[in-house]
Image (tube, rainbow, N blue to C red; front, side, top):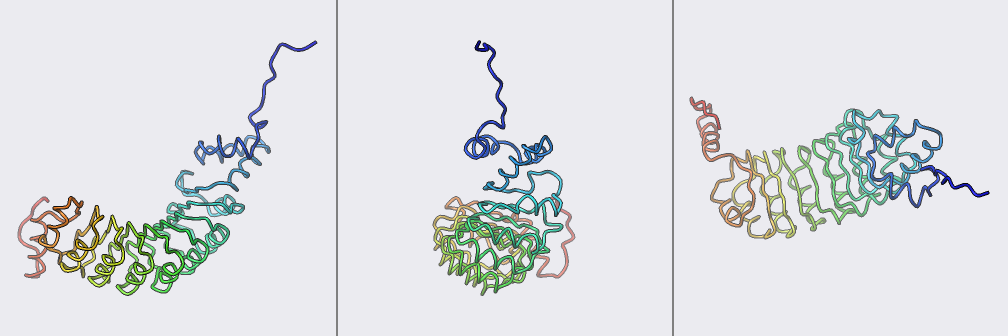
Length: 291
């Protein structure tokens, strides 16, 4: 006799690779997925399959700083990553942990390594050789980036659209010029907090990158008016320019950009005047203003 009570199915009965991984697990936070591994051996196998097919890995989604051993275990079988964000691993991440991940993932187009100070130039060379389709790269506060490794990046990753080189203080005008000559598709570039960057680099950026939309020159003390005028002439798509603490850039050179509606990040006029006065007389004015 046929039972009238419907049988109850189990989540794990659904096809793993066709349904669970691409259509269900992808909508759950990574931290919850890792917790599911403790439910049963079957769930552990399912999550391992998901991790091996994961397209995007952001270490900050796991919560507290991820342990070194856990990081290695999570990505050891993955060869299809497209996005990799590791800023929350900056305290311990070294070449030893990262190079294998880069070496086996050739589809990466977005890499975030902000503040990962314990890496070396070998990582940037590995990225350039393994990730030909790279479009976005953040190396902010990675002082190990040098001109030779940046040249390798420029030679092999010509599809780059956004590069963050904030506080990469080894880089000088020559290295930046080489980068923009090879990577003319750049839309966003940060050279902030680098006193070695000057007019030569900015003028080359303007002439080589007509698609440029965002440029951060915060704290680039050698940048002056002439290069800003060249920027205004050659970059019609520019939407934002940061020149805060660029004391040699005057309002006159910014006026054209301002009239075009470009978003400008500069000191208020009175603060700029006080800074210039301090540079001239050699001491701070005897005025305490809240600006």
